[in-house]
Length: 321
Ligand code: SIN
Image (cartoon, rainbow, N blue to C red; front, side, top):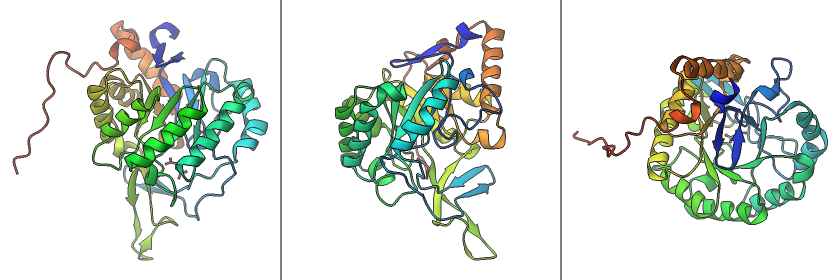
């Protein structure tokens, strides 16, 4: 299995292309009783701030017909507790699996501050990269306020870049008219890659209570409903910036979903909401990809971007209505 599935995403060498997505995997040790962490190509921690956060009022999650809404509000233990209590444990478990720490702040300056903390503690934490969460839809300050406004976005990424030499992957919001300029801006500011997409804005109404289900009203939609959205934006970003490494995220439930992202142009994928439904989702997807590669005698890195017909212009659909 090892050789067929080995891949790289920018500077990250991965034993395989399956990573666990931020916010669905704790700090790396949540699934310990189900399967060994070392099976994964990598994992992304829950978003970390410098200081701990309680997050939003409950209810914070709701099931929808084809996915899940969340408004967690970036609850986290804070950087210090992560370094002291979480990182040593997860390092003992992870083997070759890559650790990506996801970070955020309430303003561009705070992105720089948390990145500086990561840089200062990098030898203790032993993380392989930083994912910059400029795209959480569930916070009043920061979040999509930054990820949807190119000026603030650029400022946040620039500050992270100035603070650390670790590889950075900027997590992009789908809640914009066009994701490509944000990917371009991340690359311009020196990011090694992009992760896309974060959740889409959504709301569910409790018709008996005549009120939104979530404590905050709206939240972020994830799960199978957003798979085609993520695949679309990965395809577009790859077409526009063929050299920019991409971690594909959004609605991956099966190995075929993962393959769609890889063929659209992602070098590796992150699996999120599926793990709440099936705690074995990540190893199941991994096994499916391995079977598929073996049956066709191909290596996973050979299928990356395969859906782009080389030499042929991909036509934009024409609106005739
Ligand atoms: C949250 O904590 O509210 C979700 C994280 C995110 O969407 O970035």
